[in-house]
Amino acid sequence: VEQMEQTYGVRVLAVNVDEINTVNKYKGYSFKNTNPEIIPEVINDGGVIKVYYEKDTFGYTVEYYYDGVIDNSKTESKTALFEETISTYTDKKITGYKLEKTENLPLVITSDTTKNVIKVYYVKDNYGYKVEYYYDGVLDDSKTYTNSAEFGSKVETYPDEVIKGYSFEKTENFPLTITENTESNLIKVYYVSNSYDYTIKHVEKGNETNVLETESNSAKFGSTINVVEKEFTGFTYDSKDKETIVIDTENNTATVYYTRNSYDYTIKHVEKGNETNVLGTDTGSANYEDTIEVVEKEFKGFTYLEKDKETIVIDTENNIATVYYTRNSYDYTIKHVEKGNETNVLETEIASANYQDKINVKEKEF
Image (cartoon, rainbow, N blue to C red; front, side, top):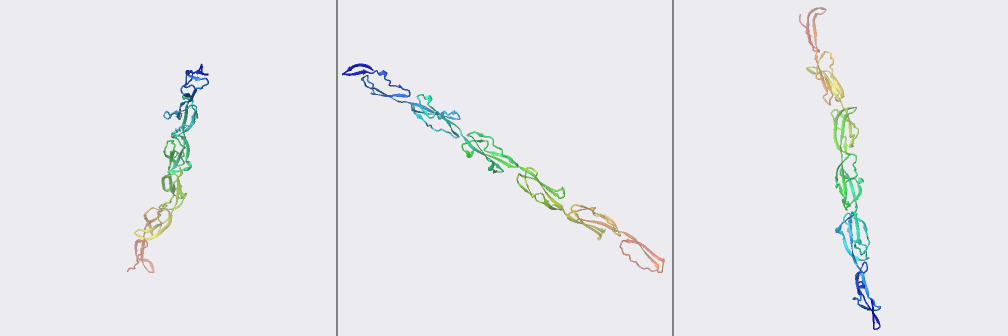
């Protein structure tokens, strides 16, 4: 303001308009207006011209990072007044992620827009998962395994819970891709019982090398096989070493014991051609399958001829043998003599006949 001459006792000053900043004089502020609205060319001494500024508006951005990588499609650009404090942002968490951290929050707006940047970082969250174990289709809750893993990751291993007598069958939902739904984060592992051979031996008691029968089969681990006695010709059930076999991985054997029965036998000694004439009978008893020798004997007046079998092998019935004999033939003499003078032999009849034949002695005339 340059001094000018006084007018009517009031000094008037010239105004240098170029020296009054009506643009942006202060950082972060912008010119608003003056009072008076139009700056005069002169002003009374002591007069005041007021120049008004207001906080300017500056841009700021919110950037979103997922696993450290910016997603430009989600970046927000906004504006705020100089020195305004920004303490909130739009949450743009996506499925499976959680907030990790923020940078430059709260943000105090500056005039340098490159510094007006809020950064929001999300990382994959961890979610629980389970591994269930089934044995012959039945869940064993005591073996259920729980853990957690990062969203979207693949679970490609699990603890092996195979037990004695079982083998792996299959899995369901494996490998597992972790989702935000923990109910669906489930692996199922199936085991099935193996089959193992078993043997039931039926033997003669006291002579176990004589195996009457062997039952061989297979059954699932842990199953129960009843050991049942059987009927065998010539034998009677005695005992067994166990009532059941509970199938294990080995030694699945049982033994059933039987004793031999005893049966009567008969050896008849008869006259050949006259079998009703029984000269003698040998009777006795012996164990099943024992061998009895059929032996001829001596009988007065008879001679051994033949037998229908050399031995009797003891069976459950018809243990009979027959030995045949023929009658012997013997000479006989009938003397006809004078009584009192027996040396006077009137006649002598000489002939032969079978043993025990009856010969009629007839007198004759002389």
